[in-house]
Image 1: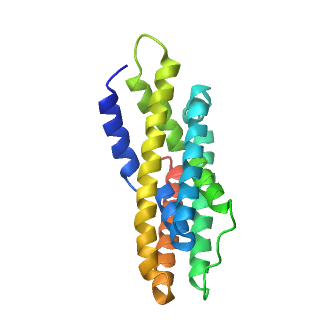
Image 2: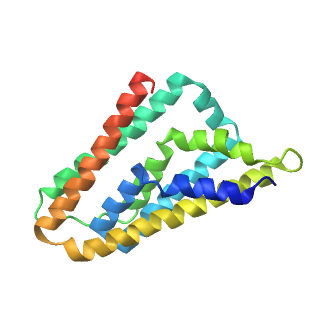
Length: 202
């Protein structure tokens, strides 16, 4: 096995940087509490596992190798983020935030992850650099993917715990609306930026 410590450090650096999945976890935690944080995080990691399986089958590499297909997937995923952002902004105008139906937070996490083709690029470009030149590549790839998914789970759950603590303090009144607006604006901004990037080819 190549340098697992180096890979783990690099993967940790990648997952700790807030992204679209982080925004979804934080937003759902603020509205649904710690349970929603766990379910949304589990959904995101389910999407990561699906990308890992697609990568092992070569499909993620095919997506990454097709500019048109890659752009379409990026736009679809980004549009979903914009939709979640708009929903958060609408929720901010309500007197009280309706509780998410059980399972919806999991689906939102999974769809956010599945709609992010950069995850596939990670598994097909970065991860293979740490595979051994001899021995079972499948076994090594499974181990490396598991490390990435575990680190993602821990990182997102940490963000969820932080958001839950903030939610306990700011859940009521105008502070809830401020947090919802911030989350909604962030999701819309990330989604629109990803759409522009996909259309312009950046």
